[in-house]
Image (cartoon, rainbow, N blue to C red):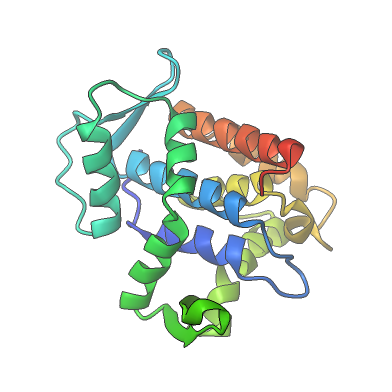
Length: 223
């Protein structure tokens, strides 16, 4: 698989799941966490740093392909966590963990350093706590990932990269299908499904576990 531009996939996933407008509703915080966890795992699989053992219970493991360590602290953080586990854990366990440790804040802070997000702080009246919030530094940047997906689905004549195909699959998995396919040609879903079916097995596995985790979240109301 070609190398992914770390960490663009997880950046785009954050903008798609957390930036809402007229065309795209907000996503529940837990679902955002699950989506970002899946994006970071997929990013590191694409770059050759992590592998998914699909025949052994979807275990997430450090790759032996000899890729140099990621240059970004976000990817390095996850790799070190995976390496530190005494026994290999399955993808669903990692998705659950990443959602619990507030991967949104970690990713947003990373994007703030890169100039893509703006970090703000304000004092709340309740117990005089400091509340931290993140906003996209530019509205066009925030809308760009979804706009790119919709351009593919409108033109239907361009081969999507693995990164963008996984991002499209992630967007569907977190419940934003309507935003993707609004006013697109009748063949758009067929075009998307053909690309998603062609994803390598490790990415298919991550996508499947993300969709299952989001569905469970919706059923249990644990948002």
